[in-house]
Length: 479
Image 1 (tube, rainbow, N blue to C red):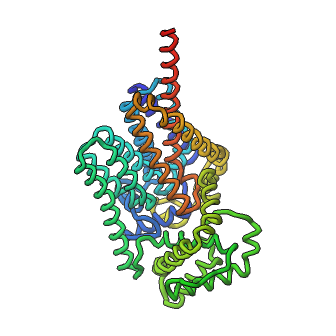
Image 2 (image 1 turned 120 degrees about the vertical axis):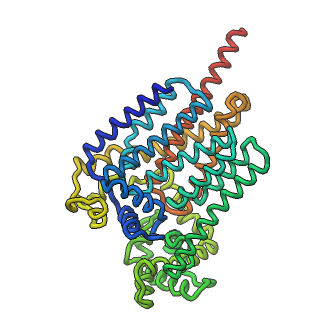
Image 3 (image 1 turned 45 degrees about the vertical axis):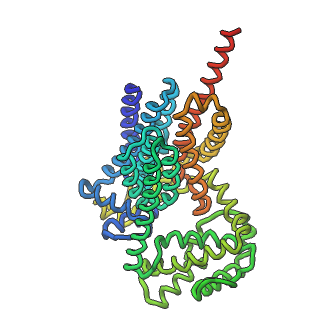
């Protein structure tokens, strides 16, 4: 085991050195600049969770180098992956070839260095989530009070890095429920996991209210639910009956004007889950915000947060009023994009641009705006098959679940793996439900699930094969 881990560590170093020879600069997309701007201005809130901007500030104290930042991200992600695999081997030993295959998938997987090379919260989120999942499994297998408090600290950090962690307390609750500890431990674990997120959301909401006047936890989620809800309107007449406020009724007018004009064109394109309504300035949400901002003479950031309140009430009103239409015209295409995800920013380096914005130049002390790369498009070729792989891994995981979980003999022979498999399955189901409802999925959101799906499908098939092999051997001996 130790030799495998040492070889994996050396392999990871070699992979990263070769990778950085081809990509000497970090990779950027639109989110990168919002994180850097929030870090440079020491903002208490931002367009996205502030955790990664705080991380950028902490790293900046040590070094301004982008290479130092992305190398640290690579060390964190791959270190967390090795810890995760080591824990699994310790709890339920597998054969040497299974160890090597799982290590090779982590070491040689081209997604890992590409993910870590982005100035983005993705790598930090993946690393902390792997540590957190390892800790939750440990809570189930060998519960201890210090593990409860440690997972709470990680939970706060993860949540402030990406708000997708809103469903993490559900996974934590399942882990505490399955732990072999008294009801006091289980109750404290469940309650505190929910409580820390309640406190964190209330804290963010209070700061947002103080700085922008918008009493909302996440304006981004308001924009997102309104964008998702607009998917029903090419197929239904815009309905203003029952809208909860004058502003939401005013917004409905912008929506009506747009779909009266463009509805036939949108319908002709067919069903698709998109985030265009959030980003394109000529579409209703941005048209409404532009007039709202001008009317009250607001800064862009303040207006963006304040209209998030309107979008939130508008979007959820539509979802509640037209649940079937929302399921048909948004959730179904969103589910398809979840299981066969587009590469999005992974398809090309730096969004196809050979320069970076001034925020990156200043933060990383670049000598100019131009960045160098051996090939901006080769990553699209290297990663082209990963959306298909992700789909197949989901199928393999489900097949493994049907082969393993219904068989009592397998569950009794591998009890630790059984409970870990169930915990990971619960996490993946919660992730699927959240992602399908919250936003059309792109591949960078599913890097962690790819690792979990591959590892547990591989181990599950290994244990099923071993169990059937042992049964066959026993029967032969008896005969």
